[in-house]
Amino acid sequence: MVNKKRIGVFFGGRSGEHEVSIRSARSIIAHLDTKRYEIIQIAITQQGHWLSGANVLEQMENNTHEGLFPVSLLPQPGNNCLYAIRNGQLEFFTGLDVAFPVLHGTFGEDGTIQGLFEMAGIAYVGAGVLASSVGMDKGLFKSVMRGHGIPVLSERIFTRNQVETQIDAVISEIEQFASFPLFIKPANLGSSVGITKCRSHSDLLEGLMEAARFDRRILVEVGLEKAREIEVSVLGNDDPQASLPGEIIPGEDFYTYSAKYLADNSQLVIPAQLPEDVIKEIRQTAVKVYRAIDCAGMARVDFLVDPVQFAFYVSEVNTIPGFTSISMYPKLWEASGLPYPALVERLVELAFERKNDRDRTEFSYRRDP
Image (cartoon, rainbow, N blue to C red; front, side, top):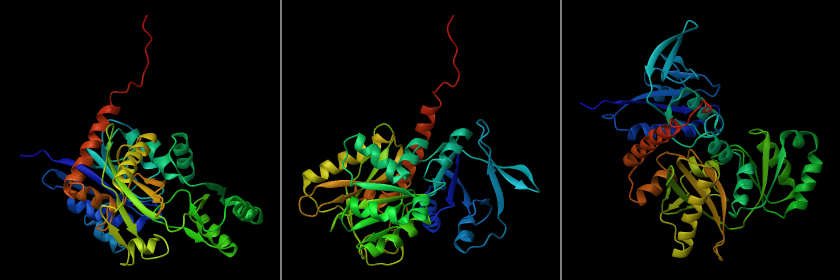
């Protein structure tokens, strides 16, 4: 008789990537071994409410909450309990052995919920607070990469306040910074939400205002014309391993949200057709990126590669990469010899491994006499 572990799958979230998170959660839940795990589904609405109950995933997909009830996790170690909230009172709902956050973007991939799991003392899948927050902010991430000698494209960071109150000065600085094309992005978001490719002066205002909808920090990045988009999946804690690289051939001008999730004209090429020495260096760099931000569990490292010279630049790291049926992270591991069910199992093992390591840390100090 197998003693099942109770695994809480958290999905949805207060993020522009809410719908993508739901799709990722469906794939993960479908591949979790129900002989080994009791799966507790916890949906987080776009208003930030935590809900559980029966058929949570289906209800979120249908935008209904019938029969669902609010739940909460207390930020104190020791009990590993999820509580139902009924009539303003906390009632025990279920224990949790491990949390699996499938939350892309803000309040899920940026270290916030990881901090709650740390305070509650629960094992959880994926990167910790530091790696999550550094990996989420594209501007800060680039600074860390430069500190480790890892190539990235040049950028400028502006705030929403600057865009709203000093727009002429901002646009002037951008045009002096680099020539077109330029990419304007929310610093803290993924799935290409809020990204604009600017080819002229008239594009800049629209791009800045669009990015400012989704974040208070806005990144303006040099565009690399005809760049090849290469991705590598990384797995592990203290001894991370890199998958074979894959290439995205977007069906649009760049890999937009629509090209990723709505249209069906983008292509995934696995493995990427690159010279062997370039593949080796890209895989080594992916692990270097992973270690540089102290990542754990999983991440997908994205590269932009010059199509002629094969010079490459790290674009970003995704500490909770997509897990939908078309997502590159699981596909790359499958091509590297690790099928989806085994990948999910390994991620849970890594969560317990990381928790055991954290539990060795002492939180009190006693001087010897």
